[in-house]
Image (cartoon, rainbow, N blue to C red; front, side, top):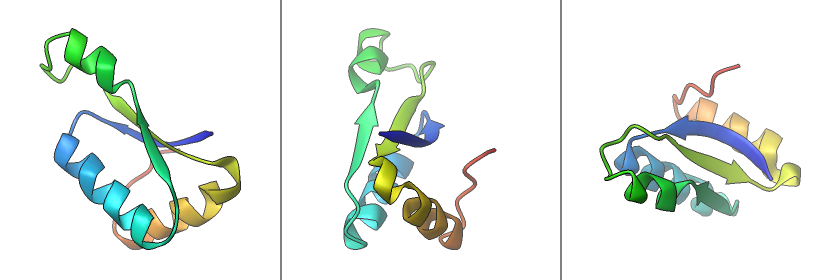
Length: 71
């Protein structure tokens, strides 16, 4: 698994997961339970992950959709 991005925005994560799914790429969100345990105040970002084989295609897809993925 490789990380695409980190965010504290659950709406953005939902949209990105749907975008990936439409392209046939399975995305997984990590750290959801940690975020809930800390009271859901948004201090701990959640990580959007994809399989290593899908990473380059997922990055391209999200950039084409206007997403900034960082370095």
